[in-house]
Length: 376
Ligand SMILES: [Zn+2]
Ligand SMILES: [Zn+2]
Image 1 (cartoon, rainbow, N blue to C red):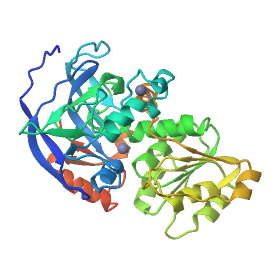
Image 2 (image 1 turned 45 degrees about the vertical axis):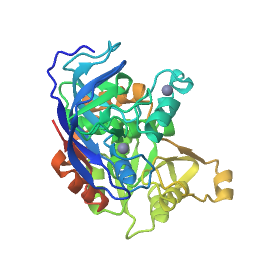
Image 3 (image 1 turned 60 degrees about the horizontal axis):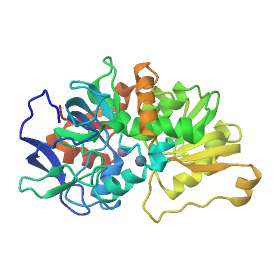
């Protein structure tokens, strides 16, 4: 390892030890060291995402103890062997899917379904070589959800990084690593060409608002945002929505069909529930495509009206995360050019010491856009 920055021995990290409840304990643990192909980041900020909440509540299985946090930005402070594309001091954002770059899927560009990442990290809480870089003060292993960004330092494979332009606020840029790149991929790969299109986005939390921005930047003509929160819908308008529907006081399917004069070309579902995914399919017009982005509990299923779906030549496609190596730089570029406002998306900031409050607020629906934990 080459390192030009003096590193402390220990760091503050938010460790999840509890089962089935989102309670993090703040602990001092050793600062991890990068191995081949990895860098060490001094974490600037890490986004507050529903996936962490699902993990913390036990709705997504993940081994404990663990440090969560999968959407981070920071400064490179150490390089593992073989890293040539980054230097000490680089400002970077890390994607939550950390591609191995060597498996069959990665070799054909499909970082979003990298076998090595899913097996080693999502199932086993380790980095790509099958080992965690984190231990607690007693030397016992701590698992890592993605690169474990809820800590002062994080080891991350260089393949998961993109450089951050000087003009972007580094802390806010963290949100590109999950919400931003997920939205970018859902639009450009899940949907396709949205220029001039009539689009509906169901659920405008962090990811839905990001989709709103991306479709607006890429030229969608009519953008209908659906949610149960007037506050979130207001923000959606600021970020590019042309129409809003509050699902609490209107019939989503009827209203969207009326607004779009018969149905939309693309419907994005960013919540992950049978009700809303069913709505996404039912608001489609002829030849329309629904893009499912939100994750649900493992046994959740959706029903589709067969005859209508078949006769109108409609489509339903799943879109998970993004092809990190292509899409993270691309969405960073969109942000740099002004097509994706990270400043407007990040509505709440908490210090690491208040991470439990941040997740309680997320669980209560009290975060209007995206929150970040500011660490650096
Ligand atoms: Zn996320
Ligand atoms: Zn791979």
